[in-house]
Length: 640
Image (cartoon, rainbow, N blue to C red; front, side, top):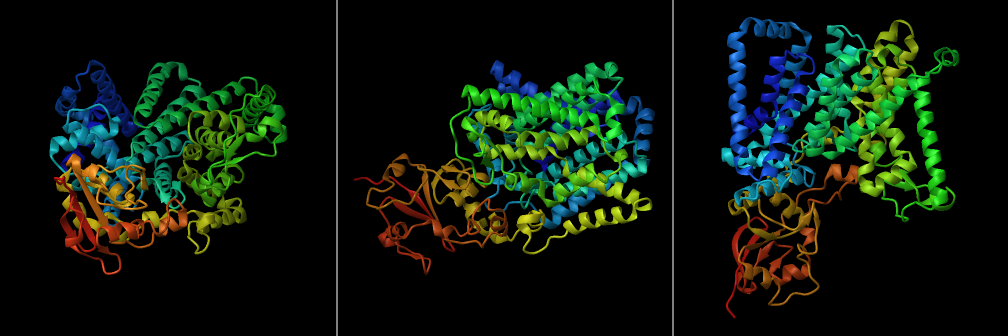
């Protein structure tokens, strides 16, 4: 709990102080996060460059103290002004929305708990913190990403174990993320000229729909990425998109261009350090919206209006298509395409029907991860947004956020360039740019308003939306709802099933272990022990299954003196989310399947009865702990 409070203070307090002194009430949370993260990151870079990272923790806590003093000074010297702003906020509908989000998130986390499903990405993020913590203890501060290092610094200061902050940290990050989405949604509502009451309803609906719709396959972004740096980076992307829109589409932009440009650059600075994916999102958004802005200078409104077509989107689409065609022709005849690479299943497909060298071009698989992220309901609300939704409910920022990823991932030229720099498994992530919950909220409000004018169309549209919110058995691969990851996970698919092993290994931080990749993945994240794996996949170094075993098997590890061997035959149960998503095998928690019969026979362990014979253990194996089908051996050096 203490560590979570300190982290909350670090990422918000300084920025909130600056915002209070500047009397910024709009985008308060997003600006506070940005200013605080800019300071933390800038100090990190300076301390790394000057090689004085030892003083970085002291500077961080000094910032908290100075911010608290500055806020208290502001309150006592200008308490009437502060009280007036506070009273105005408490009387506004926004306060009720924020309060409801804070309370509802707390109740949700208390009931459902922390998302620790084996073998989700959360363990990779927790392991990143553990590695940073181990490096910090041996004086290697600065060798890990800033988000993990920041959490490690706070844990080292408070003396808390990472398992002690899981629930409080989950509540903290979830609440900040949802409040950030509320701030973004509220800004969209202001641009659509919603009154305070309507904007509050829109914000609440947008937050709720984001929580249940935003994600990929069966996995909710809200719950899946609780410990990831992408949480903060995504909010910075949304703020950057708001500011970029103001810069490009606001007629009075010259007055605020300096401060807006500074905020935009700061968003880039933070996202590059925290999670580069969102920096790419922001860059693509700016390029596309700039093209839109350029098109507005030579539009011929009257001619296009006669056709009932908006000129700007058509022009932007035309520019992108023209550029792609020109690039395609050039690359095809110049032979500049990269080597032929096989498409990645469920991520990309090859356009083999194109002539010549162009037949190696790829785009995102329209039925793969991109579709899993948008889902059937996502595609439905995008369609409704552009067709029956009233124009008064459409705004440039949402329109651009919808168009950009679709015009990128299905553009073979962009994809070809993109795949030169990164892996095919990253391409689909561009669809995260679409704030699907906000789009759905706009469609619902528009249809409700149109009930008085277009009753049948509005009712059909609302029925389609609400029906798709209901999960239908057998249609999981079509709907891609997130409910199974938002609900309680059976403890036999979580670390609670192996709690005694985790407790034992937590007292041996920094030691190396040999075990199956799933157990190693879990222990590395929650106890700080070291195990060679690639997420929940085995590596050559960490593979314990061999074609044959002899008296010298694993002797080299025993000579080093800091190795343990864990045999975990305590199986979990089939994973529903693994089965439906295909992201991992459904029997991933049946860890006993990983241990070969040859290995168990060599260790004198009976797979069927889960028993062992100590008298027949290899001499360099010493049993130090056993509990309910789990054995932990110390690899010790034996004199020959």
